[in-house]
Amino acid sequence: MRLMSLSPRNAFLLIATTVLCMSSFGCHGNDALGLEDWQRDILGSVGGVLAGALLDDAIVGGAAREEPGPTGPEGPQGPPGPPIFSVFVDTFFGPELTDDLSVVPVRVEEPMLGPGSTPLAYTVVVPSNFEGSNPINMRVLLYRSGPCAGDCFIFTVDGRRFRLGSTAPQCLGGEETDCSDGTRWIRVNNPCVTAEDGAEVEQFIVIDLPLSETGLGYRGIFPGDVLAFELDTFADDGGVYNIFGIEFSDAFTDPVSSDEVLLTGDAALEACGQ
Image 1 (cartoon, rainbow, N blue to C red):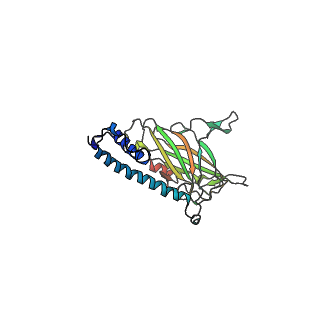
Image 2 (image 1 turned 90 degrees about the vertical axis):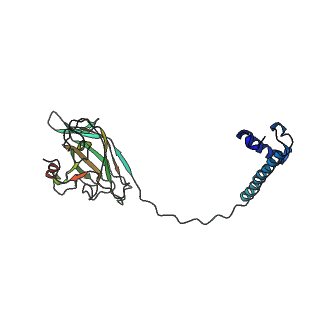
Image 3 (image 1 turned 120 degrees about the vertical axis):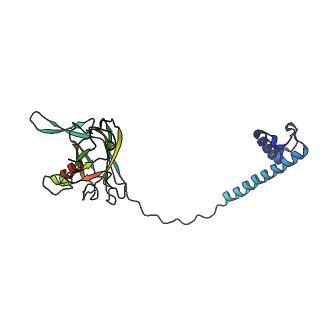
């Protein structure tokens, strides 16, 4: 019988038995495996090498554990990274006309933009650990469904800021008293651009809008500020854009707008070919 004809299991048992018998039990009793004397000599050599290696590791390892080397000096502490925050908003409000013709905000359970939608408002508080090293990014999560009736979908963004000690909200992105110059028009890169008219299109869409001069043109946002926003449909493509939520975060070093930001209504109409 040749050694190479042994099954893996028998070969393993053979080596293990050889190691044990050489260390304590003696090397007699391998006749059940059908080995000749020269084969036992070969395996005895292998077992001896393995046993020696195991014993050497145990001795060296034991000595190393008993006499550990001196601990090296502690390195200098690195500079702390900038604090990062992430706030998710999923509570939205819409206008409701009361009996005395005044408008009050009511919670909207299924916020959406598109045909027949009403303005949506939401608020967020800038966390106290915001240092301003990275701009705040407003990420709008949308899900589009329905037919394509054109390829131009634009919604507006209006922002206000309440600061500690102020008596009235301040305009974000504008200088006029009524904040009429603070409106931003966002043209969404939507899938209807490449779809046939009337085709049913569903798609998850993410829109990044930095609250900075390179994004929505905002500046002067500080920790503790209460920010309020209103979204409204300006031009629709026939589909419904359900809003999953909106995330505010300063995790991006230099965020850029993912979609076209327009500063005037005329520019928005021109973008839609009107």
